[in-house]
Length: 540
View (cartoon, rainbow, N blue to C red):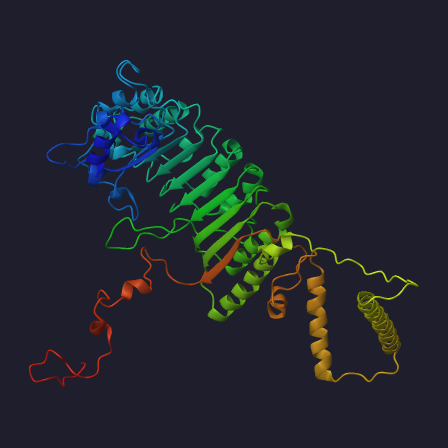
């Protein structure tokens, strides 16, 4: 398939109906299935590929061993970055002599794909070439400090003092060599620690940390307060040492933050024993109250564990309290694990889910029918005319119509006067009952029900003009809601005490057979069809 794409792009564009060369803007190349394999004894022609994609903006060489559960990070890969690829992307040597350099905007560096002749200064030098100087997104994947000397990168000995600082500073120079960088992603790398965070550029708009077990909440809070003022999107997934304590400074440190997505699910480093427990004692303590940015649009907190019910309630209450200051919030998705009794957890889930939905969830209304877009045509008013001349038959019919219209108007006026008198009597009766005389008092059961209805009505009337999309029972559970946000498209709260697993099984994982044979899925009737004696066997 990849070789066919290269052949198509290398063909004469004048013979093509579509301009395929100008349609390719992003390439995701599987190292195991495409880059390292041959087709008819030939490897992929990188020169022909990159020379015929002038609109290419993103190149991503990925491998399945770099994905979750992250237990194959030490395995070596046969394929490496081709040495000639840097010259091809820049249009020749010197750049631009063979074709126009490709101006990339996204690139992924993988430590296992580096060649042995590359040094620590190689990424910095490559970032200064025409093809890479326009990068806006960069990913650093699988760069481990202990394994760096195996690649012959540093010019110092591993035991020398300051080796780790020197190594991390070289990566910081490579990152800061990109003047247009906005998106930085670091995955499964021990170079991501407190020292690297202090060297990151202040112009980042998106930061993604995946499986970086050296970063703690204190170090990350310091980074947010000093270098993350312009941050707009923050993704933190599978970081074993990073808790949510940084939420206490998030609102002050990142006033422009729009997306906060955190997944606290962690994986075992070894396959045969459990070492995936978080390194922190509590994901959020009772005394730590989150502070939310005013520009927040998406809030996703997944797989939170190791915290108390009081700490969870503080987080939920902080959201409701900050609702007037979060006009752009559209998505709330919270998944937490609480090790408390099932009855307490169920009551807590019902209460806070009703409150969060009552405050944030948007009330969806069906659109009006299409004919309502056009205003109705006003009906012409009939005016009776008097004439002394001879009355024609048509005039007789018109006079009957006018008489019928007049009678209809009189009937409407009579009904309106009756309704007015009825309203007056009702008002008199209500005033009399309020003064203490006239009407009998209701029974005790009806009085209690009446008081409950009044309390629900009063709590709902304290909202804005838009009605609360809750039933009276849910409104009772929710309690008094002082502010109605009503702009969130999704509000989901899940509380349970299930143990996290690397793979969650669903109903589709327990299907018997392929489902093509109806007899295979039918219930057993006590007869074994394959029995030599004609059936009659037992199920056990």
